[in-house]
Image 1 (tube, rainbow, N blue to C red):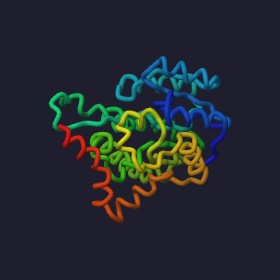
Image 2 (cartoon, helix red, strand yellow):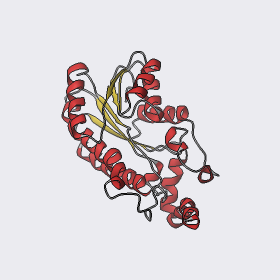
Image 3 (cartoon, helix red, strand yellow):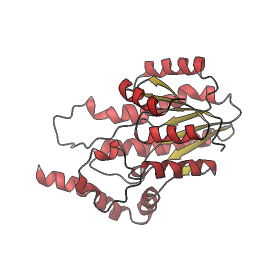
Image 4 (tube, one colour):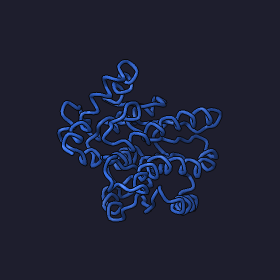
Length: 258
């Protein structure tokens, strides 16, 4: 895929992986539009991305997606790349009565439903372009769960499956479908957890991870698994019980302290 002279829409582009994708793609001569729920973060991001545009938009809101599409169709009709990056990750104790029935699916609303709805809304537009791409950002945890974050991991496994199906359905179009499955990456998403849980984990810098992702896209590598994400997929097939037990240690510690 040619990674210059595109117009790229990135959800969750104000920080972390989304921001770094915006920064590196902008440096390659692409026009960038980022979205996010926090206007202050968007404003801060634009200070470092002076040529980019930003739209406050929440992917868990159908109305926001509709309004975003209207804005893109009007102001950036040449948009030909959609990167579905918006996501949240929480440690959830399913024994905790304080976690309500409605709140328990918040990651599904953002990570999974938001991505599926964005694809559905923007796909007819992308299909009109001579060359287009959809990039769904999943996780190395799509292949084996981290049980202390059960809903997050479930959304990423489902997103991996959805992306495979989407790729098959779009194989006769000009829309390429990429999946980026990051490993543990130095972002705010990673910092929310207990430092003990990261012992022995090789953490990739966000700059290196995004650089590897873009190299994969240039080579038309449709499933991109930088760093330890590739090992997680391999181990999920070679020794699934072993790798699950390794990733279950945070839950075992949580239960012993409860």
